[in-house]
Amino acid sequence: MPDAAPFRSATILGTGLIGGSFALALRKHAPEIHVAGWDRPDTLREAAALGAIQQSFTGDLAPALAHADLVFIALPIGVTIDLLPEILRLSPSNALVTDACSTKLRICQRAEEFFSAHPGPHPLFLPGHPMAGREVSGIASATADLFQNAPYALISDEPGLPAKQAPRVMAFLHLLERLGARPLWLGAQQHDYAVALSSHLPQLAAVALASFLHDRVDENGLPLTLAGPGLRDTLRLAGSPYSTWRDILLTNREFIATSLDLFARHLDDLRERLSSRDLETSFDAANELYKLLRSL
Image (cartoon, rainbow, N blue to C red; front, side, top):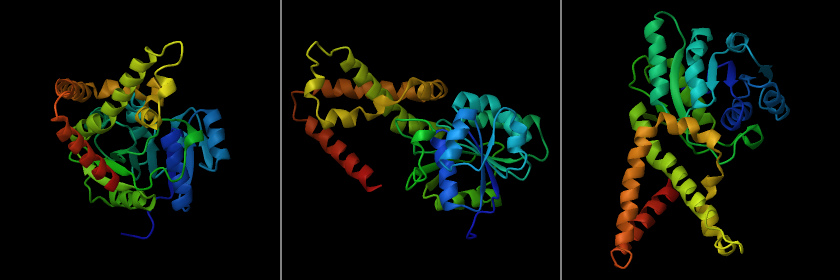
């Protein structure tokens, strides 16, 4: 692979936590790339003040995309689905367009619809998902090191998507590695099933536990006044706003519902075994998984 990715100009659509962090990472690790942002004026001013972007665009997409050879979509899933055809239509044919949405199947279907209806020269579209989110959002929480050692899912084997070996795809992989990420290839359904278990289920479990406890806080503040660091660690995800999760839940509801059903059965099984030493096997399995996560 070459020492530097051949991208000269990147446009970041959405300069919040993920888009702003990607912009900051480019400025730090790939300073040869000119970085522009497209967003609301107030968000762009903050992104520029932080040094994340060198040029600002708002409103009309056409000027923001006209000279970009890398387009990074960091918008909510619903907005991405709505705007993706226009983004693909307006982006230069030599550009690589990629997104950072947390679910992939609907995004891939939208792209396939566009490519089927618009044969001929068009930019490459590479769906992606950096597993680097936080419970807070916004450009103020962005950091250049957000992607350090983070898995970065890239979607292949879907109609209309470029080959893994395409030069622009290989260049983007190399760029991700420069930013400290760990790229891996998945299919769209495989990705959405996996994140339903590893990301969406933990989020809803935290929401369920937090809302359950919220309704049981008494006039003395119990049980929270006796809460230690274990509860705080367990409920870290409960600080995420619904606005961040709405589109994720709507676009992955089948896999999430299946995950919740399976988890509910497991909780029922644990309840049945409360008075049995059989719980030791569950603790052992949990300890093994914890060690595995710590080693990754």
